[in-house]
Structures are given as C-alpha cells and as structure tokens.
Image (cartoon, rainbow, N blue to C red; front, side, top):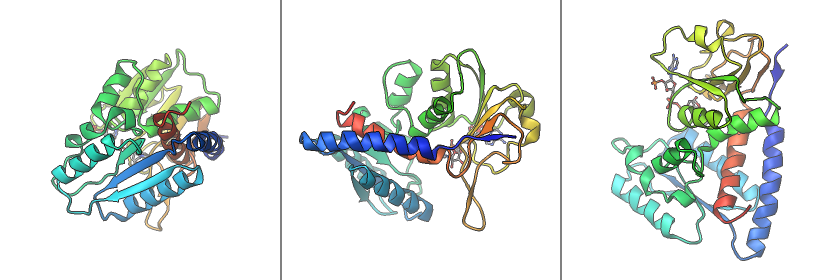
Length: 277
Ligand code: NAP
C-alpha cells in the first residue's frame, strides 16, 4: 500500500505562521507586499495568478498584479521589474510565464532584485544556491524538501534521483538535496534507460511535465516519490507525472501535494523579504 504524502496540512501550518508574522510586520509599519508581473492572456496563468492573490490576501500580504498586456516588449517588462525592485513598499516580485512571443525570460530575470526574488528566478539566486550561500530557492524546489521533511523522510546518505533539469525545479531541487547530504543523480530527456536509474532511488523526484511518465517499472517498493508534475487533463482536471497506481513507500498526490506547499512557501519568502523571521 503506497502512503499518500499530502501537502495541504503542511501548507496550512506554513500559512498560519506566515499570517502571524505578516500581522506583526504590518503593526510595526511594514505591511508586506508581493508584486506579480503578468504579460500574457493565457488562461491557466490567469488562474494561477488569481490563486496566488487569494492566498496572499488570506495571510495578510498585499498583492499587486501588474498586467502589462500580452504584447508587452522586453524593454517594457524590464522597466517594470526595475521599478518594482526600487519600490521600498514592494518586498517580493514574481515574473509570471508564459511571456509574449519573442520575449525570453532569461533576458528579464536578472532585473529582479535578488533580495525580492521570492521565487528564485534571477540566475544570481540559483548561483548562490549552487554555491551553498543564502538565497531564495524556487518555491517549488523548496516544496520538495519541505514535503520530505514534513513526512519524516531521511535524506543524509540516501540516493535521490531527480528527473528533470530545469532551472525552476530540477536543478535547484538537486542542489537542495545535495545540501542535505543526499547522493544525487539528475536525469533528463537524453538519459539512457531511465527505469534502471530511478529504480535505484530511495527518493525519486519527478519534475518533467508528462502525464504517466513514471510507471511501476521505474519504482522500487521502498522508494518515496515526489510528483512535481502538473498536467492538465481533457476534463479540466490535473494529473502528475507519476502513475498513481505504483507500489512505493509513499507518493505525493496531484493535486494536493507539491502545489499548495509551493504557494505557501512563496508567501513565506515574501515575509522573509519584508524582514520577518
Ligand atoms: P521544463 O522546463 O519543461 O523541464 C522538463 C524537464 O524534463 C527537462 O529537463 C527535460 O529534459 C525533462 N524531460 C522531458 N522529457 C523527459 C523524459 N522522457 N525523460 C526524462 N526527462 C525528461 O518543466 P519544469 O518547468 O521544470 O516543470 C516540470 C513540471 O513541474 C511541469 O509539469 C510543471 O507544470 C510542474 N510544475 C509544478 C509546480 C507546482 O507548484 N506544483 C511548479 C512548477 C512546475 P531536457 O532538459 O533534456 O529537455
């Protein structure tokens, strides 16, 4: 029987502590504020931004959605990110993707002040993370570690296999696991014989974006599996990268696993950026 390693209880606890600190910061004259820069008409992005704004309101963090329109240029978006980076009343900045055609996210993330980079998007943040220096990690990668800790999964000396090497999830998750003394293997689309590698994992992190990529043949009975994938289904639902029928020691559900913890950590990062503990 595979244990379900849910994230909702952990997320609620994180949000409760964040709300307390947000109230204390506001009482001391620093109401915490998050800005989300949007340049797309994409409906799933709009849904995600609404959910962040709602979650922020729920813990007493102000949230400005800065909508620059789906035809915004690189220069316009960069100017907005510089303005928000210089605005003392704004503590956290998120640049929402997708961006307009021809606009490259890598040209823009360096314009987010590292002190306000609550989703670890600036390459300087990933560089600091890789160097073992304090930095905001991408919230999704940190959510992987938070879930493992919450469910009491030991990491030191154990083999963690991360499938996916993006700068937002796979690479930072691998660095965070390495920081916790796991032995880390990173797999990607060119990896040969993926099941032979993933079967060796004590902890398996799937961060690909392909429904059902990880099946019974990829998993050993003692493996703890964190499913980061979010893949929309034809009926408007959401499924992960992992076949929920696998036999493993534990598996995070989709939805209700990594997602809520990610949002809660984004809010916690904003509080830290505002000077909270
Ligand atoms: P991404 O940038 O598209 O990266 C996907 C990675 O998967 C790439 O490194 C790619 O390898 C690898 N890959 C593709 N096909 C593969 C295969 N057949 N076997 C092994 N590896 C393969 O995606 P991402 O931004 O990291 O996101 C990954 C998933 O996480 C998506 O489903 C996304 O929606 C989800 N996500 C969830 C949250 C949350 O809060 N729950 C937040 C962020 C992302 P190459 O590098 O070789 O191309």
